[in-house]
Image 1 (cartoon, rainbow, N blue to C red):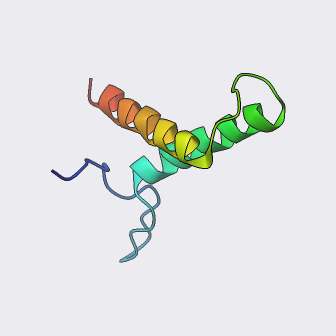
Image 2 (cartoon, rainbow, N blue to C red):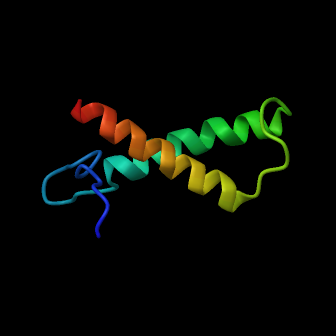
Length: 67
């Protein structure tokens, strides 16, 4: 089963660029890493943990857009 990426985030001409799902996940990862480096909310996550959580949140954001 293919994940819904909701198409490109920044389409320009014939170039699709990154998907909206990837864009959302990247933004979540930036926030998560910021919290990690500042010692705020997360306790010793691995990069794999952050990536999985970021894509989970991105999927929820895409689902919320449809409702």
